[in-house]
Amino acid sequence: MHTDVVEQFFDEGLVALLPSASVAPAIAGSCARTFAFVSADAALGARLDAALRSHGITLVQRADDPVAPGHGCRGLDGALLDCRSESELTPLASRWRDACRTQSVPLFALTPQADRERRVDMLAFGMAFIDDHGGDVAAIAADLATGSDLLADEPIRVMIVDDDFGTSFCVKKILESAGIDCHAFIDADMAIAQLDKLRPDVVVLDFMMPGCDGVDVCDRIRARPDGGGTQILFFSGNVDASSRGGLLSVLGDDYLGKGARPRDLVAAVFARGVRARTWRRSVRVAAGLAPA
Image (cartoon, rainbow, N blue to C red; front, top):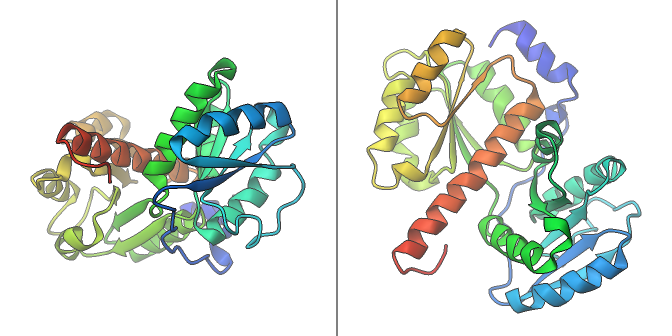
């Protein structure tokens, strides 16, 4: 990775300079789960709680006061943050993100239909967004139950494959800062050998590598029985705009240049991770198996 790009990552407030939180699997109750609803709207909280009980989720109302990292999510299986107004996204989201990440529980944002930039902000905070459906609490409850099933068992898992150690290190630290479980490899063949063990939701893949390049890795992943469920994000600084469509045509799912902002990288990986979990869940349901 070029020095100016590395400096850009750190200049934009990358928290990788701080000790990263351990990313341990969250333990969600097999039957009953408890979620916090962080909002001043007590009436909506009561209606949501009633709707969620049929999904095995109890909602606990929380005021929007400061949350002590490491304590605010103790005993919870997740949190739903009321982000229906711009002022409620930060710094409240920052405090809850830190608390949820420390306890390894999923964080969701309740939001109306919003523009792309705002949703990218939420994804960059490590929050999956739940549409408010115009106040339809049954629809909100269904979305939250589905989302919590996808994310409650463990953090999004990512495999980084890039022969440049500097790039791998930076990307790993950026993603870990958002509570994403990352494993970095500078050798593509070694990464392929670890697929069965790691079962990544997302592979962040460099294009230009010696020996086994990004296209080869992509082909080998897709040739696997479960390869269709792995989301592949090409992350390269050596591809011009006219060639990006070609990368996606070899069965990649997304592309980001190595000059991308950290928040955009986190958002892209988190969104792709949720999509991978959704795909795998739908395959199991279609096969008559219990959702994983």
